[in-house]
Image (cartoon, rainbow, N blue to C red; front, side, top):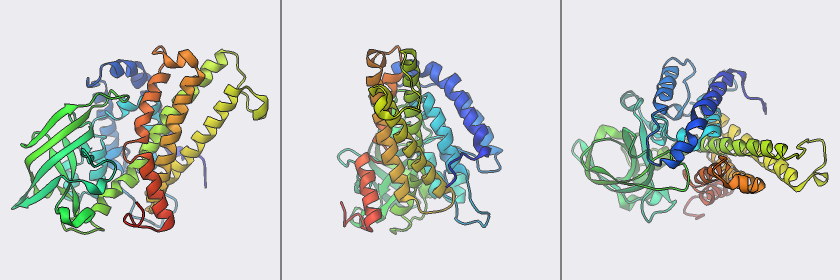
Length: 402
């Protein structure tokens, strides 16, 4: 396993670092305090990303480009869109997680479209800012238990139900809604539909007030007799385990490594700032000493760095497998579980290590601790990831191991 980042990705990593440092960091605290205010500064950055992707010979980067490779192309090792997106988002979240989640046309819905849409749908929705609506009241983390229905009516589907915790739900131009065609057929009948903003019957009920990622809006959306053209159903309309729910879930195999990369970015930011503060306080962070001969604070930092590196390598592996067309459901969940937990652990410990300075708004450390928690929750909680990993290792189905 080559542990070096491919040289061809150096430009995008450098550009993401510049944006994080010069755009995200200066406005980070402002939009944390001004919850639900739209960060207009991101419009220009989104336009630049669109232009770069349109002219990219290698497929570009970002949520809307996270399509899985078809497999072995005969050209050997592939480092493509998934790896590039993970590396870029890691740097952006070193700047600010909430702002990274607010970039137009980079929503989770864009990843769903890229993963399962056909060519005609990619032409129609490829440049649409799309949110993803999965979670429902009372359903919890079981995506297969959703109760929002989509009833066929001629050339349309009529959608009824309620979705909560929809990231960018108010700002996005469309929402990818998970709904069931037949509640009696379980997960096989679950499909995803693109519902464009302004469609009659779709209403944003409220915006949530949150612990962290306040720059990003999180909406509750209701669908009441919402009529959607049948062409807006993503993927195969037939009820089939392989072509239905399994196809929709492939989105997460691509995006969970990205969320892991986001956790790595914010955790690295906290570690680096803590190192700076401790150096200023006179602590020697040299690695030549054995852990039992250093101060407790320095030893703690070294342990946190090791945990972060383990999470980073798991994340790169999962992204690499997606780029090379290898099944990575287990590895994507391993990366998400490890990075989500470690990211929250690191940011909280950094707040503690910096004492009152870490707890005050004079530093971004307390904000990073708040922002990091969501990365261990959304797109599948820590517990759900561990359950998926156990199923893959033991060869059990979801009905056999709950």
